[in-house]
Image 1 (spheres, rainbow, N blue to C red):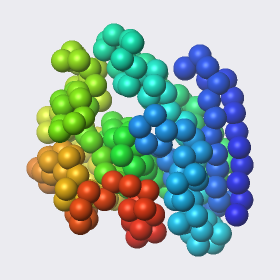
Image 2: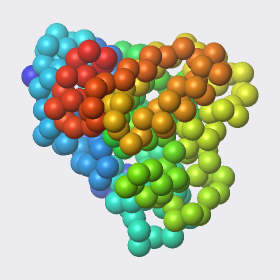
Image 3: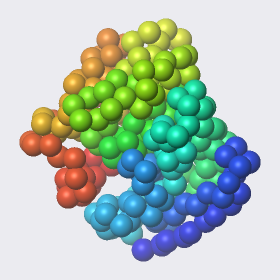
Length: 242
C-alpha cells in the first residue's frame, strides 16, 4: 500500500503540521482524527487496514490530517473566545493549505470529508460550511453542537457563546440556513451519518438529521446497536459507508 508522510510550517497556525497519505489514486478523502487525536491515529486504530481493498485498487486516497484540539476547543487554559478562534485558524489551515495540497497530489475532483467521534464533528462542520469543496460526508459517532453538555461530556466553551461558536455548530446554523447557493451545494452532496442507539450523542445526530430533512437535504442516518463508539465498530462501518 502506498504511504507518504508530509510536514510543513503552517502560516495559518504558526506551527509545523503533519499528515499521512494512504493510497495512490481515487476519490480524495480528508480524514480528521478523534478528540485530541493525531495524524497517525487512523492507521493506529486499524481503519487504514480496514480499507486495504479500496486503497490498493485506487478507489480511495486518504489524507489523514493532524488536529489542534488541545490548543483550541479542548484547551481549558485558554479563554473560550480564544478557543473558538484557534479552531477557526485550523479551518483556514485545512481550506488554504491542505485542500490545495490534496489537489496537487491527486487531480481527482471528488472530495470526501470523513471522521470518527470529534473527527466526525470536524468533517461535518467544514463540509456544511464550505460545501463547494466536497461531494460526500461520512461521519461516525459525531457530536454536532459543542457548547452544550451531554451526559458525562461537558460543554466546551464554559457557558460562553458568540457568533463564531454559532457558525461552527452545525445543529445551530443549519436550521437557519437560507443561502440558495449553499443549499444547492448541500443538496447534491452524499451525506452518511452513523451513531449507536446507546451513544450519548444520538440526539445530536437525530437533530442534525431533522435539520437536513427540513432543508430538503437527502442523507442517510444509520443507527447501530449499542454505543458503537469504538475503533472496532468503526472498522466495520468504514468499508460499508466510505
